[in-house]
Image (cartoon, rainbow, N blue to C red; front, top):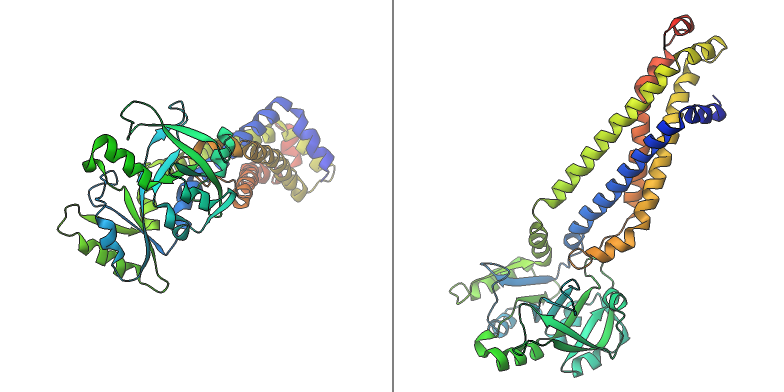
Length: 388
C-alpha cells in the first residue's frame, strides 16, 4: 500500500474530504469543550478538603444563620477554627461585571483555606484595614486592579442606604493552589459588613450565610456534624452540617441536569458525525469499484486494499481531530475566564485532548470497516463488470 495512493484518493473529491474533515473538527471541538465543562462542574467536589465542614440552614442555602451560633459551634470538640462566610452579591460598575464576593472572618480564613497563597501585598495589611479586600489573581488581571486600588462594589442583596457603592481597598492578591477554589473572588471583613448593616438597617439585619469549620487531624467528621446539628435541633434556625464535598455537590445540583444534558449532546454529536463518516467511506468504496478491480488484477492483495480504506479514513478523521483539539485549546482561556465566576477549574486536560483524538481515530476506524471489508472481498472480474 502506498501513502501516495492514499493521498490521491483523498484529493479525488476534495470538497467531500474537506467537508468530512470539517465535520470531525466541529465534533471533536464540541466534545472537548463539553467534556471539560462537565469535568469543571465536578472538580469542586473532587478537590474538596476532607477536613472542612459547612454549616448551613436546613431550610435553604439562602436562609441566613444567627451570629450567636458561632461561639456555640466553637465549643464542639474536634474543631480547630470556625469562620463566617456570607455571600455579598454585588457588581463592579455594571451588572455585567459580576463575580463572587464574600464577607469573611478574615483572621482565620487563611488557616481554614491554606490553598490561598498571597503573592502581592500583605495579609497583615488586609487584616489591619477596615475596608480591606483580598482578591484573586484572575480578578485582578481582568479588571487591572493592583494593591492600593479602591474598588467600588454596588450591592444588590445588601445595597447602601444612600444608593452608593460599598468601597474596598485592595490590600493583597492571592493565587490558589486548588483549581476548584477560583481566583475570581473578592473577600472582605465580616466586621465591616456587620458595622455598616447595623448602622443602616439595624441589629436585626445581622446574620451569617454559612459557617465553615476546619476540624482537627484524626477527628471523625460525622461525629462533629452530628454534634453541631444537635446544638440547634430546637432552633431558632435548624442547621444542616455537611462535608465540603457534599456542600459543593449540592451547589452543582443547582445547575439541574446540565452535566447529563451536555453528555447527551456530546453523544448525539458523535453519533451523527459517525454516520456522516460512514456515508463518506461507503460512497468512496462504491465510486472506486472498478479502480479496485484493476488494482486487484495488478496484484494488490485483499489486505492492502483493506488497509488502504482504513488508513484513508484514519488520516481524514485524525486530521479533523487534531484541528478540533487545536481550536478547543485556542479558546480554553476565554471560556475559562467567562465561566470562572460560577465554574472555576475549566482546564483542557491531557486526558480530554487524548480522548478527543481517540474519538476521531475511532470514528475513522469504524467508518472504514464496512467498505474496507467489502473492498477486500471484491473479485476483479465482478469489479470490472460493475456499473458505477
